[in-house]
Image (cartoon, rainbow, N blue to C red; front, side, top):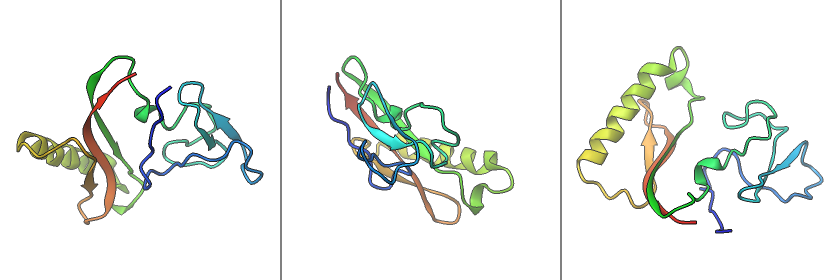
Length: 126
């Protein structure tokens, strides 16, 4: 299995499966990473056993994959997240169309200038 790297600013971080402080450790059968499913986050809002790192899992064949994550838990998304999310997606589309290098993770900013996520076009292989 190819090792995967979780960005340091990703809301959920892998833990040691034997961490005595973990409330509800869960381990993914695909990537082998463990997280604390007992801590609610935007990626793990309720214990589900679904891997929060699945968007970082390698694809089964070599292919380019566009990866995007946006955290929507701040004031810019408070009343209705749709307009701010749409604005962010348009801004990302402009950056993609401009020919910006997408081979490494680029930062996503909300309307208030806060860092709310990352996006990249990555080659993935099994």
